[in-house]
Amino acid sequence: MNIDTLVIGAGAAGMMCAAHAGGRVLLLDHARSPGEKIRISGGGRCNFTNMYCCPEAFLSENPHFAKSALAKFSQWDFIDLIDRHAISWHEKTLGQLFCNISAKDIINMLRKLMQKAEVELRLQTSVSEIIKNSSGFIVTIQNDGKMTKIQAQNVVIATGGKSIPKMGATGYAYEVARTFGHRVTETKPALVPLTFADARFAKISGVSCLTQITVNNTCFKEAMLFTHRGLSGPAVLQASNYWEPGTPITIHLLPDKNFNAILRQKRTKEGKRSLANELAKYLPDRLVDYLGNLIDLSGRLGDLSDNRINLICENLAKWQLIPGGTEGYRTAEVTHGGIATDELSSKTMMSTKVKGLYFIGEAVDVTGWLGGYNFQWAWSSAKAAASDLQR
Image (cartoon, rainbow, N blue to C red):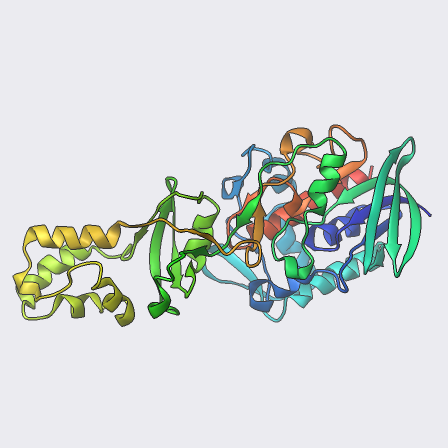
């Protein structure tokens, strides 16, 4: 079988690339259905991009690498695409865009685009070997116990990272990269809950509040959730991208309140009110009870000295913790790190070492913030490769 392009991995990036590559395209995946990560994302409604997507929201060994692809196919281009396919959507907080009805609308759109482009999709199919030859690549694939050899001018690796292995995620892209002499940066779970070995928050599991979390001089102000294992919620997932083992995180429990001024004012006007009850106006009761074991919250407002007010507020604004670890790839939304960008073209995503070999999406060392950024990288990197493949 001779084809122009073989795309391996039928996720967001793989389907997007296959639909726009042109020529004779074959798309393979070992899963039973395409786009499984799309299907489960955003609570089943897919946070497909972010209105504020910009290169600064991505981590990479080369922070400039993502600029070209993001500029050529931006969030506005993807929004235009789904509008043309009559997919209704809405904005949540911080520019996050979701489907109104179902994440399956995005999958169905991509499948329609592939059908229109006459892309052949083969599922439950694995790749045994990729060999470079003078005409491109000879790829051996396996389906239902049968081995088939394919001659492809181009090969696109879109198999993602290691996150959520129960959905079939593996390090296959990294294996291919290393086989062809590419370097792979250190990988770790990203956008993942942080854990503590002593289950210190078990008694307040399920409690959430708005916080500002700072780690390695980077801060995020969003909701935080206490769990049996540790900490989760958007603020924590964002912070996990920057967290390293042994590094402390600093939590501000009242980021939108000047609690120092509040206490000084209430000390005069409502002196008989208890400190704990006043704090409970701004934080969940169970959290206040928990904090009472860490901070002295006894007594009445009228009895508070300036020094004690300062100490209480400092503890609430600079609660420092050192997580023991993360929940790992099992629950991580993405993989941090990946195929090094120094041997990839930022304009086309093609290898600078092997002509006709492309790497796109999560497999590459480009990791976005929580909130639709990683899907936008999938669309943008896929379109960058597809535009080159059309030539």
